[in-house]
Figure 1 (tube, rainbow, N blue to C red):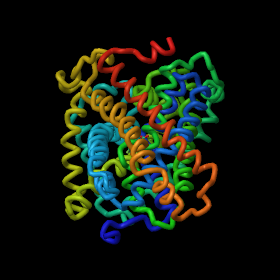
Figure 2 (spheres, rainbow, N blue to C red):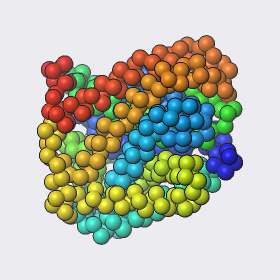
Figure 3 (cartoon, rainbow, N blue to C red):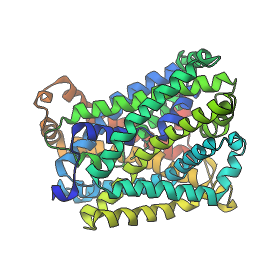
Figure 4 (cartoon, helix red, strand yellow):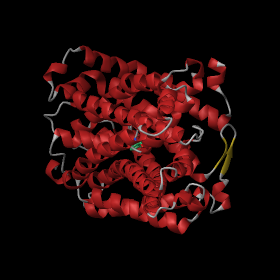
Length: 464
Ligand code: PFF
């Protein structure tokens, strides 16, 4: 069976593919601005702590479950003998489908911007809302992005996913370094760096801690079985804990580097740093315009190509989860399974695509008691990324510690790494997966639900 499913040909291939899943839109646009909002370096320290202390153990657990069973998330829980827990796998599938449905639309914006930059259309930033309302254009880029993703996934694990990651990840790294070097030469660049790195602890509130946690978890692609799936293609001789550490380091590293690129760009033109999604798509084009005709085109195109590449290795992993399910559980050949799933998810994403101004009912989709008005895309994001992922992570941690049991988990970790047995690292991972992860992830889930859907502000109650 293993040969039919395919697998990564090398440890490096696996690490790059998983790091590719982790490094995405979350790192390049979301992280720097969360940092800006959350008190600079103070946020960075918290984010790092959450990545290593909380997320890393969950990542180890996901990879171990996948490698032990060599199956997709639904099949994995069944194969371990816990049929009822397959619900966690189904929750993961739902999260994957929903997240990819809107993530692909934002990826399509990034790719569209790459083309616009090549054409020297710096006005695109000022026209951001007309761009997102132009559903024919965005729809075409979405089709291209989803088809590209499906093409890679249809080629299989070693011939598609691993190959793409081996090309795209090093390229991404070179591009980001080149852009940082250039950005640092701009006027006021160092004001940007100072803003990014000098901590302001007074900005740390319960809400900022909550965002750092959520951001760390989303950024590492946890809670929906993406790493169970990738783990299922890993050889029994590979060291899981070491691989998880490398993946976490790469993800955190790229997020951290992204700040060294974005803040100098933004400060060089004297622009405000708040604005989240808008900042990348609304403000950066005019920053690039300020660099002059030729340099602006080169740097702008390079930036949005970087963003597209980062998104692409993430969409690949998002599509792989439901595809692996169809291949393993429904015995559908990979190529066919990939295209069926991709078309389905594209259709699910159409309302998101239309919810940024084109269709009124979708633009003003719901009015939630706590969250207020949300368009369809943000609503799906709230359900899938903010609610389902922490819930999935909570359940995966509880399952690993108390159902599958630490002994079995530890046996799987020792495959490929005898030295982990009895080490402090193993003790920490066991401790975290039993106590810290269920507690914090359970808490995030409850806070998110109570806050957004019931307007019960637990964070304000706790921290003022
Ligand atoms: N980690 C990706 C990012 O930071 O953009 C998003 C993501 C990809 C989340 C894959 C979940 C996932 F399974």
